[in-house]
Length: 438
Ligand code: ZN
Image (cartoon, rainbow, N blue to C red; front, side, top):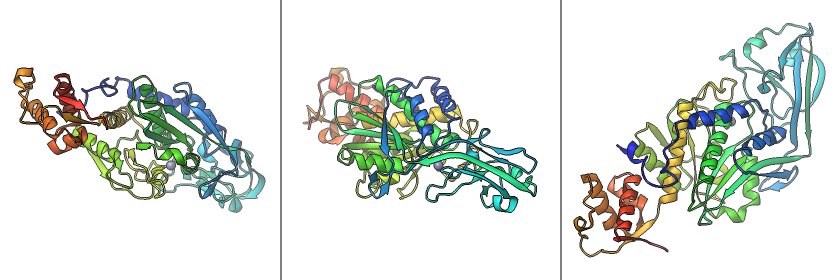
């Protein structure tokens, strides 16, 4: 019932999700998948360049060494090649085959060493012998390789040659930002992290879904302004907050998008305040969608919601994911690949995000122009084609005293937001309701 209701109503949610939303998002993920991203460097730039084919992102470069809140923008890291040659001269680990093989932020190295010494720099997952782990070393200048446990077990005694052709030097941190202005300057913030290499669900699903959303929103009238942020996790969000402290107060609602392509149920994590418009819109949409889902309380860990919801900002930003990070075995391994994410899940996540945004966009309050006694609906042709429709008229008329918004009315009446909005639109048309302009 509520599924069909949420398909109705008005722009931007009026347009039914096109059949190919999952295909379109998955295709963009495939374009981005081979790139070796990290929290800085050319991989992030290459990623943003591809996104710019879809939306007019502005690219920001913030120099290494810049103080950002309690942090400092790090040195920029780039890697051209890396490998391990065994005693017989064979390349047994090759960055060319998977960019997960190099520990992110590895310092350059060119050395010959024994197997015992080499092993101090090797990381595997013994329980998953065919998967390569994903690791970074952001806080210590060292080097390392990640490999499958099977590769590890096959290493023979002898002298190994290791090469990491990387650069760790002053440069900049890169992020992408897109502002779609609306009628109001209050903003809806949508953020995705862009710092993981070839990992599909953790990183690319959020990036590609946010891009598809931006593409769609760019083509419709908007009440709120929308700000899209594609930045490296943690340091990118901290950098944006540091450079935009004055603007942060304009954020009226926001979503961190991460992990939206796996086959698990949707999990919405509330903002720090727990009762913001974002939280209420998300809970409402998920409850009325009929999808199995879970609402999680706020916690100060996770993705960049932890920065947006730090107490000095306390922004109304929640996070939407499917299976939460760390709760699926493929997380941060080579098994989080393009086959791990499904087009159906991506399309379903896209629809959920769009519906939540539609509620935020359309939530407003009205004043009944006939508050004394019920207005005569019949003589205005507003009998309602069903009991539910008539109930929706009565709820909207009764609670529209300027103080209750459509979402308040939907929640109090138990109806879906879409049904309440449809009723309100008809009542405005009939001259019984007027938008409450504060
Ligand atoms: Zn991650």
